[in-house]
Every structure is written in structure tokens, then in C-alpha cells.
Amino acid sequence: MIRRRFLSLSLLFLLLLPFPALAALKAGAARTVITPQTSIWMAGYAFRNKPSEGKLHDLYARALALEDDQGTKAVFLASDIIGIPAGLAARVSARVEKECGVPRANLMLTCSHTHSGPALRDNLKDMYGMPEEEWQKVIQYMKWLEDKMVEVIQESVRDLKPAKISRGVGTASFTINRRQYNLDSISIGLNPIGPVDEDAPVLKVIDEKGAIKAVVFGYACHNTTLSGYEINGDYAGFAQLDLEEAIPGAVAMFFIGCGADQNPNPRRKIEDAQNHGRELAEAVRQVLSGAMKEVDGPIHAAFSLTDLSLIPAPTREQLQEQLKDSNIHIQRRAKNLLSTLDEKGKIPETYPYPLQVWRLNDFLIVAMGGEVVVDYSLRLKHELGRENAWIVGYANDVCCYIPSLRVLKEGGYESVDSMIYYGFHGPWAPPIEETIVKEVHRLVDAAK
Image: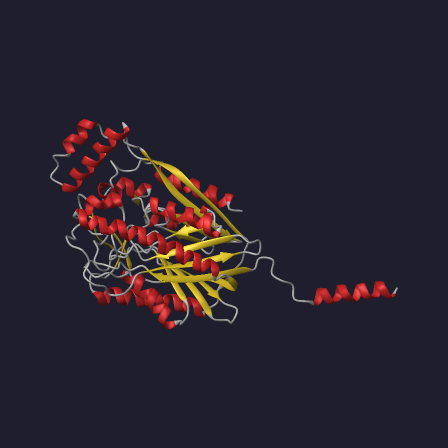
């Protein structure tokens, strides 16, 4: 009788103890400077004809590591660069999986797409027309950048500690659709009635002492405010630095959403970039100070490379004709495609396109490769639920522009002309949007 009473009291005592959260998360954050250590050719604009001249502020790679109570880890990398090429993403992910135990699906590599950082992609070499000695600087920088990315990811994993994570969505209004409709064409300009996505999603990480450890935030707008020769992170760079100054000790990391057909407005002046950064940072602060929804585990992830189809490749004769084109960029592309034809016997008509989904309970993050137009964000948030789904663009491989069916039919830079600079022989085939959306839904189901 005494023993039975003792067991009953013991059980009651245990029931009265605070019950540990089954889906508790740990978080770790880190940042490192990735500013080129020498003058270097800059990314994003074909008209630049010389390397960089100084800087407005440093560029950074920042990482947030998460771990659930089952030991599953995931790492989000934010970087102040134009885009992460597929080769660089593959090398970084292979090293991180080996050294940190984070599988490919659980590593999300993103960028701010600043047009005031270093050139990176090898297939855009002809866009820039840089001398060979400048290209060698870019090659060396990319090797150094790879090490810095791996190091900051490792540091974030080593920093894993219990944390409270929450999310919310703010708004900023400086983006504008840039696909300007003319009588006989579509040009890059201002389209005040075109679709935009003004959401500014925010993730807050609180450490064990109650201090903000990290802030992740995004916005669907090109980082093209500035076009000079000083290295900087454009409006996103100013926003991150603003938040880190306002929240001492916190790591603030930006990702760009589906902003391929969106530009900041106004632009070209340094104060424009500063003002946009300040507006975005203030939108984030408002979310941080209000009610936010808790994020918990477990962590589930899914990743795939989906073959997207291009239109049929040109013939050798058609490429030889393009060598005579008045556009130097078309000439250069034709020369490269002829080399591919000679080496491989054919020109590829598909491309392995990366898609990725993270699920943390009812919270979804969908990461899409390439320069994704805003239609995808609006559609996917409608189909997946705006309150629970974040759509990240420019992730894992900035291969080229990713138009929707609407944009593909309308033509213009995002569907046709940009493919010249990225080295593809032609536009995507019309099924592109449905192929991508169908695969996103498959990955959402797989990440359970």
C-alpha cells in the first residue's frame, strides 16, 4: 500500500512538472565579410567597362542554422552577391554535407542579387566583355568566396543553442513593376498597374536570454537602385546594416523574393538606396515589435532538379548567321553555342532547375532557382496560403530568368532578351510555369 501510494505521488509530481516542447528548436547565427579584397569587375550591367573603384560598405555572407529535437539540421545562407552559380552551389553543399552533416535538401543558398557586387558567373563573361586578367580575378574571388561560405555555415552550426523563433509579414512600397507596355513592345521602365508583391516576410530568433539573435527578412524587388563603380549591397545591404546597428548583437539577413520584373523606385542615387533600405528595415522593426506566430519543428525538407524545356535549338547554319548580327552579345552567344555543338554534338534543350521546400509544422519556405517573376509568388502564396508560405527567389542557382506563361507570351527582356546574356539559345517552352508549380506542390507533399 505504501509503495503504491509512493508511485501515485511520484506520477502526480511528474505530471505537474513543465512538459518539454516536443518540437523545440535550436538556432545558431554567424556572418563574415565577403567584400573583394582587390578591385574587381562588377556584376549586373553590360555597360560597365572597368573594374570597381572603392566601396560604400562591406558585403557579407550570413548564415542561420536550425536544429529540431530529433537532431535534424537545416541552414539558411544569405549572401550579398549577384547570384550563386550551380557549380558553386554544388561545391558548397557537398562540403557542408561532409563537414556539418547537413544534407543538400536542408541547405538553402540565397543571395540579395545586388548589382553592385563582384561578377561571378562564367557564362556571363561575354556579357561583361572583361579582359582576361580581370576574369582571372573573378576566378580567384570565387574560390575564396566558396571557403568563406563554408566557414560561415560551419560557424552557425557550432553556435546552435536553444531558441524561440517566430514569424510575421510586413509591407514596403518602393517596388514597381518594370515591364512597361509600349504600342509595339515591352521595355524596362515603369508599369504602375503591373503586378507587385509588397510583402516583407520576417523571421525573429530569440536566444535564451531573451535577446534577438537573428532576423531573416525578404522583399520581392531587384537590387538595382545603384549602377556605379563602388561595391555595395544596394538597398538590401543598407537594410541589413540598419537592423544590425539598431539591434546590437543580431545577425540580419536578407533574401530576395520573386522580384525579376520588379525595380526599386526611385533609383540611381545613393540616397535612394539608403531610403529604400531604411523603409524596409522599418517595416521589419514594426513586425518585430508586434504579435508574431511561433515557429516550431520538426524540420522537413525536399529538393529536386527538374528539367525545364527550351524551344528547339538553332541549326549550325542559323548560328553562323548570328555571328554576323549587329548585336555583339548575340555574336558572342552564337560563338559559344557553336563551340558547344562542336564539343558535344548538340545544344542542350533542357536545364536542371532547382526547387526546394522546407516545412516547419505549418510554416513553408519554397526556394526557387533563377530570376523568378512576381507571378510565381502571387500564385504560390494563393495556392499554399499567404499566411504560411514564403516564396524565395534567386536560390541555389541563378541560372537565368524564369518567366511565367503570361510574361513568356508577352515577350520582352525577362522572357527573350535576357537569355542572350545568360547564354541560352532561346526562350523557355510554354509549359514552364505549370512544370514548376506542379513540382513545387509535389515537394510540399514530400516535405512531411
